[in-house]
Length: 296
Image 1 (cartoon, rainbow, N blue to C red):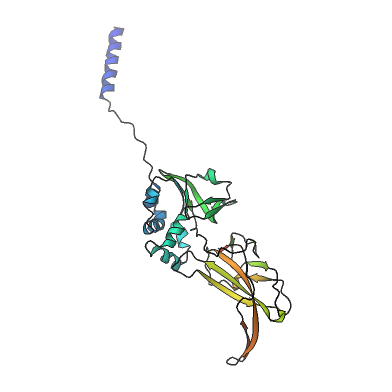
Image 2 (image 1 turned 90 degrees about the vertical axis):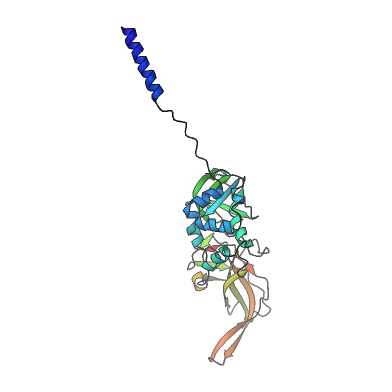
């Protein structure tokens, strides 16, 4: 009797097993290329437009591997409107390609791989600086907000600012008059000092201070600047200057330099206004430069 019951039970179990549906093992979801991820993520729609305009979509879908520091739409919105329009509206613009390739590193670098490095070589040809601060890891001043998005042909890190390759002259002195931080607030008071120039006639000696911004687009001027001239009755040794007095028309996030040039001046009477004014010469000596910084 027991054997018969056991046999019935085994028969029922076998029938139930045979009747159960067979499920195939779910395949692993395929990881897209860097281009696929950029296209799929709405936060990268401006980056997608830039990549397509520059003709780099196929490259970033290639075998690689690449590491891409990807600016979000909000990052692009920080750029001056005329610069952004010039970059995006000029098909195949060399400057746009340079800007985008400045965000690409050959090879697959996860966050753990770059912490401790001082810079990484970009495909554009220049090095992008790396620094680790209290707010996180930064590359060329841009904060990395999301790390290690894996693609089939590399890895993506999200950044909050568009990085701009250098366009300044190559003969800038290595040690500047101002050891500037990576960024400055426009109204911040900064002490600027430099070695006085030996004027032939000190009573007519003056200095022209400029803040120059070098733009990455060949469609715009090489640089724009705000400047002011100043002088003293005695030999100058330095000054305290409030940036807000000079840079109202300059843009945030653009590579900037302070440039000090020795000039001479004359005082004359403006007959139209009845006031004494000053006229300044071209530079009479070499300029002194600060280190690069950006306004925020």
